[in-house]
Image 1 (cartoon, rainbow, N blue to C red):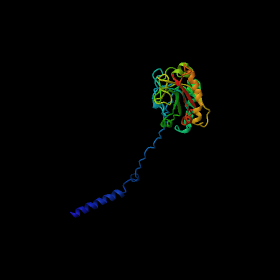
Image 2: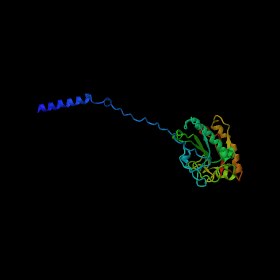
Image 3: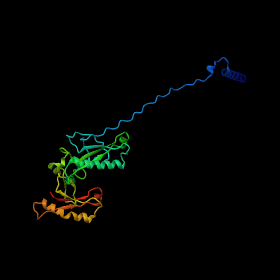
Image 4: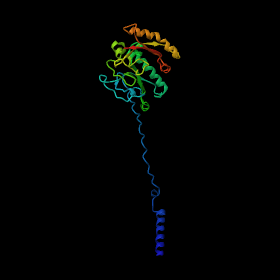
Length: 274
């Protein structure tokens, strides 16, 4: 049994040697075959299409929280239907600037209020005594990376401290018109400073109305005593003028606080019962 296993092993070794060193094979058969992969054709990289910028005179149905957001996701709605926001200007900024950086923020926060004043019209006093406001939106970071470099200025009106009002009629030049100033005017639910006071649009139920402003020169905050005393006589006079009885009337004065002053409200407001 052992001899046959040895013979088989010898025979296998001999065959193996013959296969490796036989002289009958051609030189071409001796060379290993190398398989070459085809050279890959480079594919053309197509940059993503930048999102289209919004258009001026486009309307939206915004909620209060959405109006405070830095970007907008709402789709346009017909301006002839229910809407709370109207785009009145679309600007652009340099593509090298980060969309969420201070330069872009300073650009939109300067350009939108300036163009808003020209769009809604009226005097500075008319705009201060109205509930018309402007907000602004930019593309998202992903949209900016895809090539979107615009900012959008939108006109809104506050109904109260937590809701937007419906925009009714033409918004352009609205504060140039008496009916527009009356509709969007600044009113209150109670005497300013009292419990239950809330600012609201005069088109909604109210009991007090803003009469005029007391303007201060820009600069450092004058201090509470200075801004409080400055409005006493002007507001008292405004209350007397608005009353049917000059001997029996009420009035109130809201002076700017330090945080309001830092936000740009450098004026006080005179009030009287409506």
